[in-house]
Length: 382
Image (cartoon, rainbow, N blue to C red; front, side):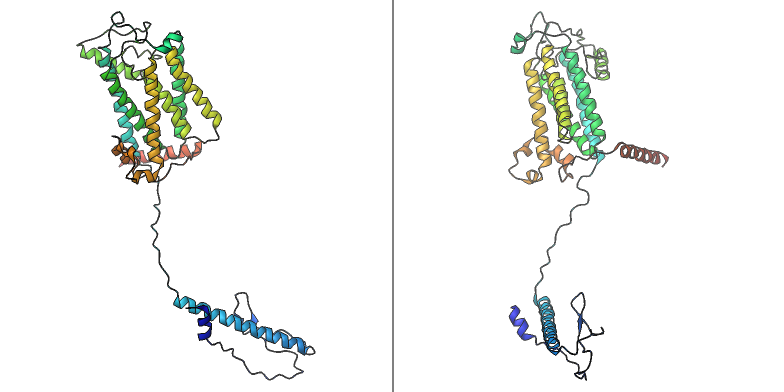
């Protein structure tokens, strides 16, 4: 209904109360306005000048016009409210917790990574028995080895840099608020990369990359000796620094390259962008560690290239799917055709937004640890 019709249909009557006043009366009854625009009928009328009849006439006419406008506005507003059609739009309420911790899923991812790491030591023990002798199969030609002579201490630098990067990432992870989500991402990628490594090591056994390498004697059918070698490799973390890595055959691809690259990627992804100096320091540690693998002639160049390629691609694919909600629901998402997509949906199914970079203070971290300890103690008492 048009506004003009509403105004015409609603006749406005201004009630006028009779008052007996003479020309010599010092006051005249005038309704007053208050802050909300309504009339104050019980207010005391303001004093008027009895000698200024012309001004009083103008004031009375202006007040009457104001009263009429006020009545018209109120009538128009009430008519519009009665005739307007209101459409109720139902909006789905946003979930209260879009980033659930779900520590039990993190535990599943940890067991997945642990299983593949242990399985890697088993495969190394099996492959070691198939490595050809250096006198029978000399090292394969490698372009990097043709130009760079071996430096004996280079591989020690690689493992030292790897330990520093893993330590930095672990400390950084402890102070993250959403450490459960980020932790299961890290565990899943570690487990998947080492599972790939088991496949490539087993199907193709390369000769040693240098004659300087000393391999442990082969045990052949000695199952007990192989089991002890597996335990020794696990206890020493598979590092040459600990003297636990005496077996050969784990060349394609490089596990040291995986850890150096993956640690740097997680450090950079889950740290503020303004910490560029921290990113550069970690990048130098990672890049120099990878180069020292080749300088020490501990891996072929192809081992390092494939290790870097596999690590970066699976990291970027996983985080692209995790940080893009529309991509998960898209029918044209070809990344969902990966074999690990069901595992991804299991781990990231309830994560409905990008994980923000929120760090906890040391005091908050201590309180959180105390609360977790009390929950465990309460569970034991029950």
